[in-house]
Image (tube, rainbow, N blue to C red; front, top):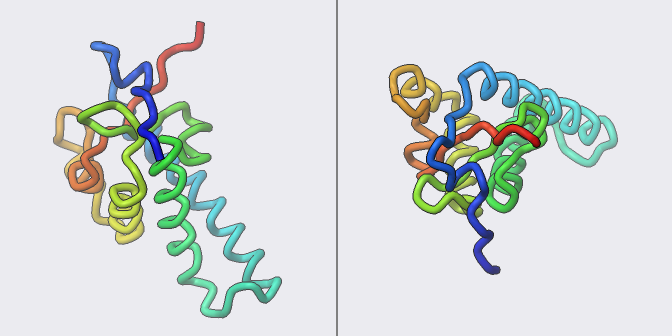
Length: 138
């Protein structure tokens, strides 16, 4: 697999970190999607009970795949933010996205985002990533 080219906003000197509100609502959208998917798959008999565990598993997988390869989950796309490597501005790859997803599912990562200047949570620091606003469309 070849590395994706740097995203435009990650290479801009004025790249702006995503706001906590944008990040929160993107997560809410992704969580609702995972709840719907887990509920539907459980009712179809494709996932065993207990149903309560599956939304978290699906969220980890969603984050790993979408952030690892595409820089955005569906919720992030809706809120016009994306997650890239803080070093090179490209997709963070599957292993680091998986770390982010697991930490997010454990509900640990948000605390540093309240005082870290670039709004990076624990999951961003350990995933070597940053969540940025998309540049305005022309």
